[in-house]
Image 1 (cartoon, rainbow, N blue to C red):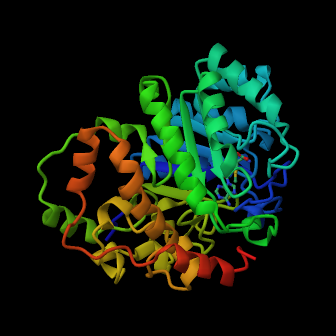
Image 2: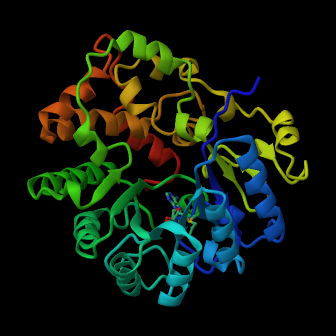
Length: 398
Ligand SMILES: C[S@@+](CC[C@H](N)C(=O)[O-])C[C@H]1O[C@@H](n2cnc3c(N)ncnc32)[C@H](O)[C@@H]1O
């Protein structure tokens, strides 16, 4: 029985990349020789669309603008009535290209920028000052929505507040901050020292959110700092929900419910993995000639694909189960060796969010958040010392 209800595709349209970012989670998938052809990419898109009600495709890579047929791909997606979205390092995104993408129907561009200038950038060769100018030009001169996509890591956590102010200043519509994921070059990069990283991430977030609320930026800039804050929370109202009923439903779905149940992550060779942090093939579209029914029929049921919240022995009993969603399964597996264990990073972050971030949010948000906390549940399993021990054992703290 098919249980997935995919509504979006994260699609790597090339493995080619012209940067060598020092934390790249996709280094293993870079610059390969087995990329899908454009015809295969278009077959994949139209066949998946026939099978599922796909409403968004995020074009990624490698560097999506290195695909010489990118304009045709964006047009094809748009003509199917699907929202075309792209994440790019923007090195090739000049005004002419932005206009061509706009004409082809691109709705949103996520430009990857982590810092104000190149000094602390781990995105080697990315010319940060120029990128800010490009982002500003697109935001002010085209109909493409600009989102700045920032990876927060030990090397730029001290700059987060300045980056946030710059995002606002250039007129971007959205800012998304991703906590660095432990995969690919992030693990072999010995420049990253995680000693105080998580504490700094919380205090930078707190400073940003305070400033954001005091200045009433919520109607001008949408922000999301993964697992810590998102603008949409400000609109949440308490709904008198029964926490036990909600929990019953949540326990039956995947911890990563968005990616596991609603988004297919397709690699440039036509295989699909759960997300960018897992590398085991779940679906192989090329092997079945892009026949979606045959591909799904031959699904490879990896542990991450079928996992449900109920199978996480600690998280399912934690009081923050429904607000933390068990953090990141890839991080839990990396740090503890067990995909069903609590995620030590999320345990620390979630507790700090409850103690330090929620109290500074408006009352309606506080109440709706606390409604989802199971007061009879357990406290988060790991504290900051446990997290540091694990990071040390993995060589991420010297
Ligand atoms: C892999 S890149 C591919 C698209 C394009 N080449 C770019 O640089 O935006 C997609 C996004 O993943 C982010 N990313 C890379 N490695 C990461 C990691 N270890 N943790 C979190 N995000 C990461 C990048 O900064 C970028 O925003």
